[in-house]
Length: 300
Image (cartoon, rainbow, N blue to C red):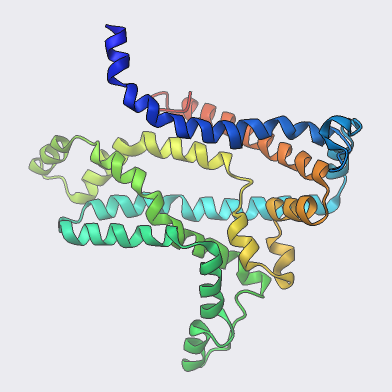
């Protein structure tokens, strides 16, 4: 019986093979190189012949005052994106689900997905065109008698630009999983509630939201694991020397140290630090979710 069941699922196992190969080659095999964080690694000497230096690069990292600046920037930008961006896909999915015009709903869904496929290189050019001193936004400001604002060169505005552009680009794509979760909510509950006189808002509050709460919790846990990933592609293509003090993050710092300054050991130590923090955050968030409500589905 088990053999027959295995044969039935054999095509699915074959479909897994490319994904498994990808993760083994590009995620697990490179992990062998983390030893260079504990060595004075030089490219010409190779990993094996480079001398061991213990915790030298971790001490160097944590004794560098600028590291704490980029760490603070990373946390601030990530928390702003999480606070303002995390609820948006949920709100969008719940509200769009209430629309009964199927063609309009499909059009809005498709339109909301499209920005996800625009690269940050292209989007950075669009934003620079719109937000520059002679761009669309400042032209409107001038028309109504307001002073122009240098959105991409003013530290006070730059983080807001990062958060808003990131939400606009990703909220539609992020809503896909919530659309799927809402589709799994028993429709008979809505029908029974409507017969009992419940309004749409009441049905959202007492049926739809509790029905997708498990997915919200799982996505929140996964989001916490990315708290030190403030968006390298976005920031690398948008930031400049005028806003460096508020936008330089762990990943851009790692890029400069590892690629431009060729300090592979130091950048690897920074990468290990990021991974440890992500692991701790995901474990803590998972346990907190279980303690708050044992009915929630968590990662383990």
